[in-house]
Length: 128
View 1 (tube, rainbow, N blue to C red):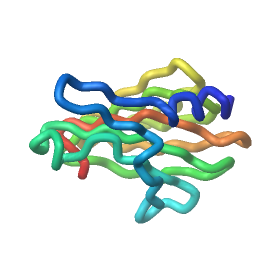
View 2: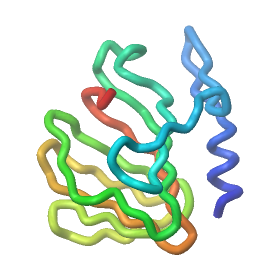
View 3: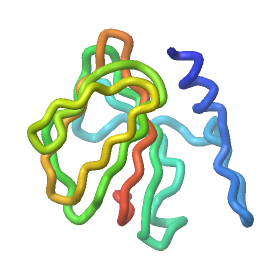
View 4: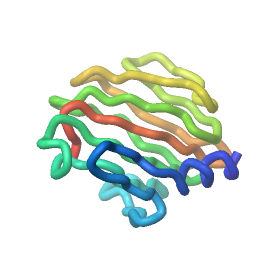
């Protein structure tokens, strides 16, 4: 599981005018949720505020507690690990290959299992 994430973590975003090496981007502690770290792949600065992309690493048995985004739509692509997402009151199993969408103003929370959880999160418009 962790090998899959590390392969992704060592990847690149390739665009016609730039390449972003994920290994060159530092992890940042989430400002609110303990055990959650973010790697900001693309931010508002690079996209004119249209969207942002982030790697998310949630430590074993840690959570991103219930919250909403306004005005962002958020997507999660599960890269590695297992857990659950409560999306608009419904529990969704998170496992590699799952994609989930949280429309704007929809309550959601993410809970990592005992091995942790690794996500690729996208926000439209940009979160930061």
